[in-house]
Length: 203
Image (cartoon, rainbow, N blue to C red):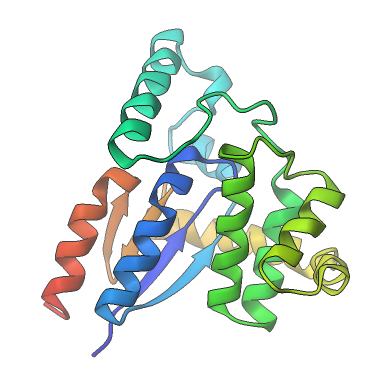
């Protein structure tokens, strides 16, 4: 039976961005379905014992930058370690991704989310800006006016809140998280284990 990946993403996370192409490729390689959940990690962190980045100790913040440099070199991803628009207002993009997921499909939703992440981390664009978001929607072949109107519907904000609560109940606490069955794989540096799990099939 084909496996399924629930993909919990933050549209502000460099780690989500660094794993984006690889999780898509793994799902395709192993014939796994994948659904993205752009949940609210600002709600998940305090509820799961974590801290948002500005409240972390200086040592942890400095180490994060070291790790980003290492992974940038390891993966050959041309990210900006401290992009000028980070953190962006991710709510409009998240609601558009959810709206696309629920009304058009999983693949276009993932494509849009990954385009948003690339714009923030590689292109230093303000992904919370309405005009920028509209351009990114067009980039992935969707109707920008239709998607932005759809994303503004309050039902998607409510859906994001419900998705966030469900993620917490499932044990998700960090971004990105890839969940296959009952197993949670936290972080793009755990994608090797995701690959192993997918290769084993339904074991």
